[in-house]
Image 1 (tube, protein in one colour):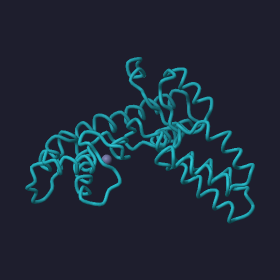
Image 2 (cartoon, rainbow, N blue to C red):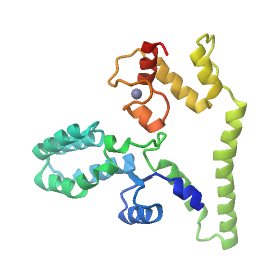
Image 3 (cartoon, rainbow, N blue to C red):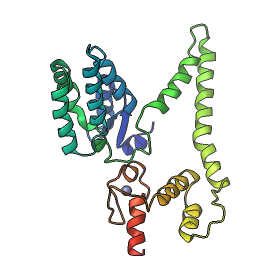
Image 4 (tube, rainbow, N blue to C red):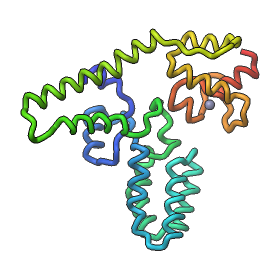
Length: 243
Ligand SMILES: [Zn+2]
């Protein structure tokens, strides 16, 4: 990766590997935000609680941990930690405080959402590529065949992810049958197919009951923070003000 590209990285999603974490901070600088993969976080919590022998206690503990992962605010987080202390076995609670509470900025929802992740809250995408690479690294394969395979795979990934998407963006248009709404037409004309679909879905939710109030420019909801696209609350605010 070029130094210019590295300098632009503000957030990285990893599993809970301490050496990888330390290496990323070293290469990317202390200011980079490290986010733990949602899937690995939940898997690790489930794994550690599997030794709780009483089924009800085990389920109650897991349920509070799940609530902690999705805590919407610091107040909620504190509330769930107290709940954990009351339902979880002592050793489980202490383990949580020692290993998870001190790094909560990396895995709790409300902490994670300060920077857009464009829907990437797991390491799934990287792991798919790694799996493909591992399938090429066969011990019976010659060095030249292996290198050839890796180069071909890299070329195919690049074509698929960049060139093909560029081609799609200019060659395909999204249509809404019978549309007469100028705002919808504007979204379709100016956004990629991927963004247009997401924005139109938000627009369709505008009138539904909502939890957040927007100033018409920004919003505190998950969609706006993770995707950096206008959300239903922004649309509602603008609609009410007639802008
Ligand atoms: Zn919003």
